[in-house]
Image (tube, rainbow, N blue to C red; front, side):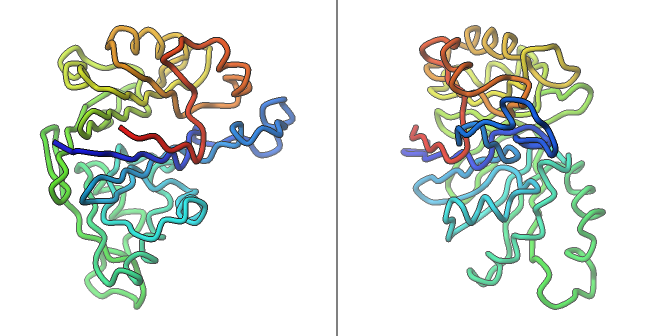
Amino acid sequence: MTDKISITFLGTGTSQGVPLIACPCSVCSSDDQRDKRLRSSILVQTNDVHFVIDTGPDFRQQMLRANVKRLDAVVFTHGHKDHTAGFDDIRAFNYVQQKDMEVYCDERVDEILRKDFDYVFASVKYPGVPQANIHLIENQNFRINNTLVTPIQVMHYKLPVFGFRIGDFTYITDANSISEEEKQKISGSKVLVLNALRREEHISHFTLEEALKLADELNVERTYLTHISHQMGKHAEVEKELPENVSLAYDNLTIHV
């Protein structure tokens, strides 16, 4: 069991981020820094390993903003571009740490990485390309160093996506349904991070109402909502509506579990 976990929200926005390009709405025009959301990703730091879950288009900016000097591994939830597009920038850590990046993903993500970043996996590599050691994962426990990680398979419309539990912390993004069997893996978590895109129904994401209902059903101690679009409303206003044990996550928020 992991003794201590620190989680930093590198990004809490949806696929386009917040503000959206050219959008004049009150959220995208907000001066509140909590309404500035990069694409969803977290940094997890345990006693023996530091890793990120997903490397979206803002990965470089996120690493610089959070002043990340050490990164041992990358774990992927799924292969959509807002979760993989920054993969090339792992090469900075290759150079500083003088070793390959350990990458944990399922076969679908592996295929996407090999297609989109074919130069990383070429038999003859151009000097300076990222160096990655792929570990294929399935829906069963695995370890990163000594840290146990439990995959939780959720559905993103028709696409299977992995959430992950590390100790008493569970992270679920890009989901609109979770089977009863997979919910059991979340049971007992002290902290749950769950996606809540907006108030209106969506084909592949939980709404605010759906996320709150699920959090209540799972009976976790504390829930943070992520993968939030500008359609949700301003952070300060939405926060007033939430139950006492539920909060909107925001970029650069760090929590300890």
